[in-house]
Length: 253
Image (cartoon, rainbow, N blue to C red; front, side):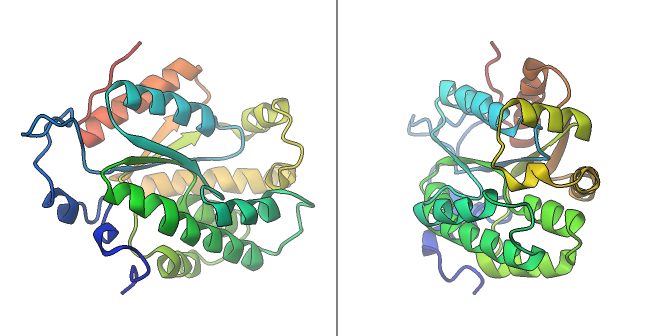
């Protein structure tokens, strides 16, 4: 089985398989109050995607705060990274010269990190009914190594399936921003050691087109959001998406 390396309780989680988890706990209403009065919801997996400088980290932090205020237990994490082993691999991936790795080597490193991250952090959290918010996941592999660096999308999908099985986010926010704005924001935060920010402008244009194509192809899962707007406007768009797609209205400030 593709997910044989996971705890059996975690198999089939996410949009493709939350039935198994919901059968083990009382049904939850829109705000997560179960019949026995415990404010819990089945674990949901939300991912944040986009090019450099799109504001993923900021928006994930704001949404995490809104979820916590609503009484929803969550785990905020990132890729590459999120677990001890994956963080060690992260340093290999984001530091050094832009051409330190070829596209295939880079992909294999990302997937090794992702497998450890899913196995040790994401799957156990979802199995416990905890919401997981992740800064990047498999869509970034398709965008960066596929659309950006030219690897076969079917090849990347097969590798990702081999690494993490059928785990798919319940909801993915694709934060879209013009390349010039994104790179200017990235330069402003002083992340000089990030290999990807130093790649040529054409790469970032391909990357943006790739994310937009993913959003268009998977409309049920993905929400394309104009990330060039003010931070609060983008945050409100995320709140609207959570209410519409997941049936969980969140308080607005």
